[in-house]
Image 1 (cartoon, rainbow, N blue to C red):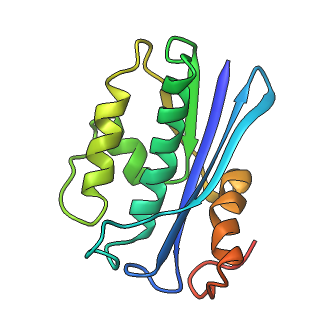
Image 2: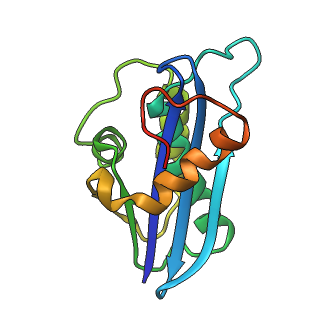
Amino acid sequence: MIEAYFDGCCEPVNPGGTASYGAVIFVDGERVWECSELFVPVLGKEKHTSNNVAKYSGFLSILEWLLANNLDTRPTRIHGDSKLVIEQMLSNWRMKKGFYIPVAKKAKETLSKFRKKPKLIWIPREKNDIADELSKAELKKAGVEFRIQPEA
């Protein structure tokens, strides 16, 4: 069984701040991969950042890693505290507008490449502590002030 968790944040303002994301993957209970990255906007759209962009980027990083490692046929559960990401990827909510749309469309396209679809599960923020910590780590390294979410 593969269990994955993602999160993202944007500080010190949302939208328009510095966005970062974190993700972790466990295979049969063993932590096999993690990432902690800053979201790098397209040139000319440096302020096109938000929590939703960051969370979608974390989700997408999991999908890309699983595909790159030929794990798209294994039973997989992907957990996140973003109702928006989970519901939109399950096609329960439609994508409207926002800076997150390009990343969301890429995530949807990447998800369609899976031979066995992962189960997507919303979890409360307090149960997403590893991904939350990873999502904030790069902001801390960059010296970004935390105004919206408390530092982990």
